[in-house]
Length: 344
Image (cartoon, rainbow, N blue to C red):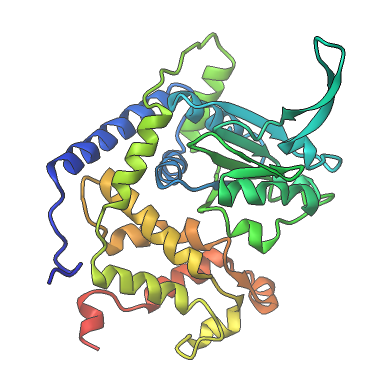
């Protein structure tokens, strides 16, 4: 009987597809570099989310090219792109669409459904925390079920379909924090940081000069769907799966094995979707690294963007300036791995 400790060798077709994915990744990053300076980790996480079939929430101060990055990614992937600027007066029908009265050639009037901007392949929900929960919830069904229900009718969305949302972490006046249920539907919470000095110099030179470039499409929607299927075939060794389960489960303060610092610093831990997303994202990263099996290094590299929006810190943690990232790093250090676990 074969176990995942000794995973089966991939078929030649799978190997060829994995090699195609690596080649496509390099070409996509090259195309995005024509417009986006730096942000290598952010771009990698965005592509991992796309190839894993998940959604991304990007958080960063204004002016860090979050919108430009997503638009450029849609061009490199040759996907339909729509942008919604979320505002306090935005209604659910502004996202999903609405019935309008239309007069036919015979003079009869009838209701015709006019599709909203959600009927695209890559949807940018800009400043998603600026709209009330009722409108935010309009995205829930689409993100999870890949369809929209309007007037009792279910309408399928074109595949692949991704929601990439942005939010500003510094201006909290007039904002509506995303409900936990909706945050959990994002594969990653990606922190977009400031560029380095050299990167900022390049940005200023490009944007204040005559620089012009054009992004070439690298993949099609059909190819992306095919690569997503290949990624799911990547095996996960038992010790890596155990590591994922240990990391997620000890983030829950009510677990008997949770360390004392977890009970003190975490009010609410990550749910099962965190395990699913860690494993799936780990599979994508493994292939991008040239491997057809997941390692603990893949999980380590992706634990922060997967877990940081699924853990609710206590008041004491916030008062002491301890961030969720700090807590996740501490959890990763506290979980035995590989041979160290077997020795216990």
